[in-house]
Image (cartoon, rainbow, N blue to C red; front, side, top):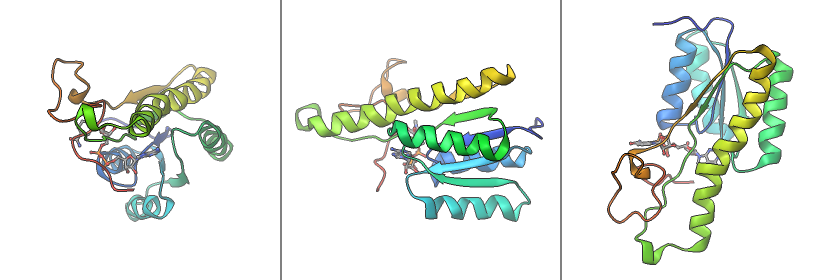
Length: 167
Ligand SMILES: NC(=O)c1ccc[n+]([C@@H]2O[C@H](COP(=O)([O-])OP(=O)(O)OC[C@H]3O[C@@H](n4cnc5c(N)ncnc54)[C@H](O)[C@@H]3O)[C@@H](O)[C@H]2O)c1
C-alpha cells in the first residue's frame, strides 16, 4: 500500500482493539512501531505479534493523561530511535451514562484522557517532527462526539467509543 521503511510510529492505547490494529498495520508497512498503553504486559503481547512478523517494535507503559509519563516515554523513544515520524492518538474511553447520572470524576477522567491526552501527545510529537520537517499525527475520534450531528443515546459524554473499556 505504501512504504514506511525507516519511519518510527508511536500508537497510544495499542494493547488491544483499534490501537493494536493500527500498530500491526504500521509494522506491516515497514515502520518501527512503539506500542503504548496503560498495561505494559498486554502491550508486550502485541509486540510479540509484530516480532513474529519480523517487525521492529518497542513497548512502553503510557497513561496519555499524565504529562510526566508522556514526556518520559517520548524522550525514551527519541533516545532509542533518534526520531519520531508518526503518532496515532488512539487512546480513548467512553463513560456511558445518562447526563443526570454522570459524576464530576467521570467527566474529568473523560476529558483528561480523550482531550488532554491527545493534546499532550500531539504537542510532544510535533516538537520531534518539526526537527525533521516531516511528520504525521492521526487523531482518532468518534461520530459519538456529535461533530457530524450524531450522538449516542444515554451517553452524556461521548467524544469516544461505543463500549466502555475494562481497566
Ligand atoms: N470501536 C469503535 O466503534 C469506535 C468508534 C469510534 C471511535 N473509536 C475510538 O477509537 C479508539 C480505540 O477504540 P477501541 O474501540 O479500540 O477501544 P478499546 O477500549 O479497545 O481501546 C482503547 C484503548 O485505550 C486505552 N486507554 C484507556 N485509557 C488510557 C490512558 N489514560 N492512556 C493510554 N491508553 C488508555 C485502553 O487501555 C485501550 O487499550 C478510541 O479513541 C475510541 O474513542 C472507536
